Image 1 (cartoon, rainbow, N blue to C red):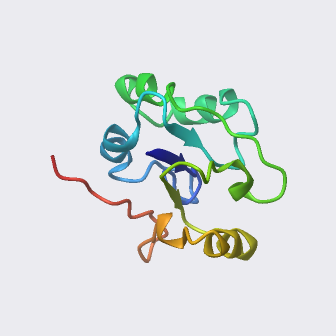
Image 2 (tube, rainbow, N blue to C red):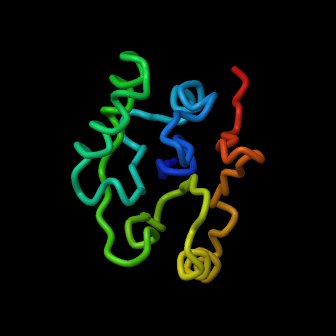
Length: 129
């Protein structure tokens, strides 16, 4: 299954702090060849997002996120999603056009909207072993 990850509002809060369980979350969802950055911080080149994330995560997590592949899209992030493969997309605030495209392809269930607490901290799903 392909995994698509946003950064701001998902892994990092609006103040630039790593979400409390982001490293655990990443350890559970990052695969070898099936995880993709789907963020405004990455347009075809993962280096900007890696540079940003390196100061926030442990060295072990940084080695893990180096496996995450870049995506390229112009208007909507959904342009980078491979709809021919099963996927999940973690985002906090998809655009209406993106939601419409997911709905038209009957893939709205593949979107995981990451909520925030009252302080704006992303509340990532926690996975048990």
